Image 1 (cartoon, rainbow over the protein chains, first blue to last red):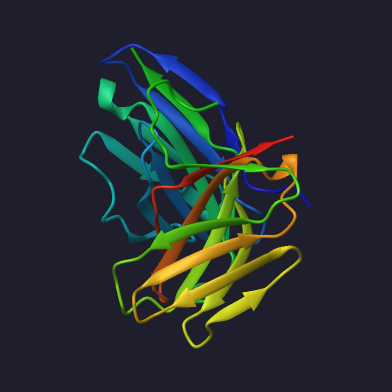
Image 2 (tube, chains in turn brown, cyan):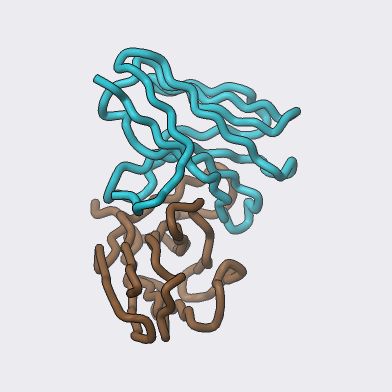
Length: 115
Length: 113
């Protein structure tokens, strides 16, 4: 069974450009999470989907970030326009259930570099 | 790989020694804790978890200890191997309804052969 996959693995863009990151969760997992790790700091929560609905988007830094999960399958995270401080590694995770004691499986991450 | 200029707490151990990685958490209401291992170029990988009604849990070569009084979590790795070299993150689950994780800053474990 495939794990959580993210595309692209690396992206280098100029400040002001737009980038779209994609995450394919494990099949059957209703819960999908986006996290990011900026400049080697701690991994921080961005948002949580349950199927196609945004359950919690309290971690989204500002309105330059837009996440979607149309149809409740894969998700995209678009940054428009990108700024230098958006550089970091963006992780996606999925889980089948919510609640404590539920393991979330992470993808390999997308390393975004804004120059 | 990691970014240039990264300053993670680092633990350097000799192969075969035991490693202890520590983590402090802030929310006494958190009831579920997880340790993740992140190797270069990969996402965080689940190692072991513990619920707040326990103070110790053992896995294969790993043990997690939870001290709720001082809000401290530790990961012990027995007979550390070169393949254990990675960044280790503790994470707490503060909201069982969403399974949202709050991560610590991470510790870089460097195993010397």
